[in-house]
Image (cartoon, rainbow, N blue to C red; front, side, top):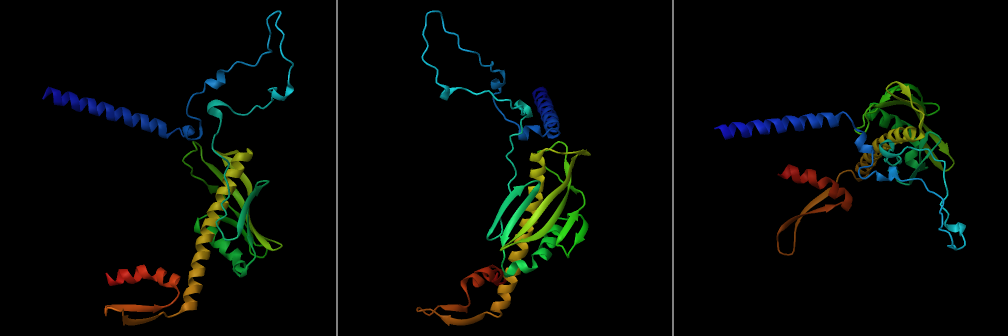
Length: 264
């Protein structure tokens, strides 16, 4: 009995210690954006001029292999953020993405589907519950209110305001998300990396919803085109019964799961 009590006490202490460690780690998310491993490179001594012993003749110096000194004063050690820059995802057919001067841009080719693109963009913004402060349908532009972000790799969360617009550019149409303001804990953020990260994040969310909306519209158009599917009963060469469906393969394959579910 004494052994059982002692074992239970040890297990309880281990569980409490583990819970304390996890709660401590959960409040500090910096480890998710820091290098994990040896940081001995921070103690590397500075380069010095090579001094040859008396009487030794050194070969001629070749400047090709000179190690040039730089004046970079970027973050090092634990202060270095190793997360890669955010990248806009070209999810739409025939699209390409870029980032320039605080604006994340998605360029799509002009087709019959881009005629109602602005309305689709508004629906995509509303699908993510982004607050809209001002909307100008005539100029195809809107301004969001403060959008609160919730990222697991940040201790202090960010919030931002953005201008989202649809702009014709020759044979293409641009979906533009421009950063108007970015704050962290009430303080303005001016770091280009963070401005890019969150502007691209908003664009990716909008384009992801836009891709779903356009997919639903395409399915609806296809269903209207095909209308009723012609289904006939028949038999194969061995006399076993079968169904003959006269419709495109893609349409039949799309409806097959629902049909099989109804059949049990």
